[in-house]
Length: 123
Image (cartoon, rainbow, N blue to C red; front, side):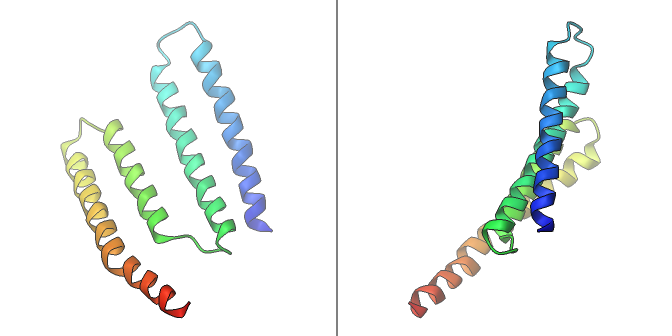
């Protein structure tokens, strides 16, 4: 029940962000480009949280590790697009992206394939 309420609250916040994004886009000034980018990022963050809630509802409260790794990867990629003047953070983001990609490949090749084999043997 609580997770459904969380989903509703997230939907309301997403709607507010979309409305604010359109308001910023329709304003005649061009000085609000950074505010617009900020609102787009907030929208995608809220949307990712909403997708976690939906995944949790579909899987009886469980969220798959591949979904969480994918969300982490998109968050790092989004951060890579935003922060490009601090080289230390840039390198840390790139290393994080590579680690997540390698981790996802290892998980899908070894762990996920093993789980599928066990499911097929039980049938």
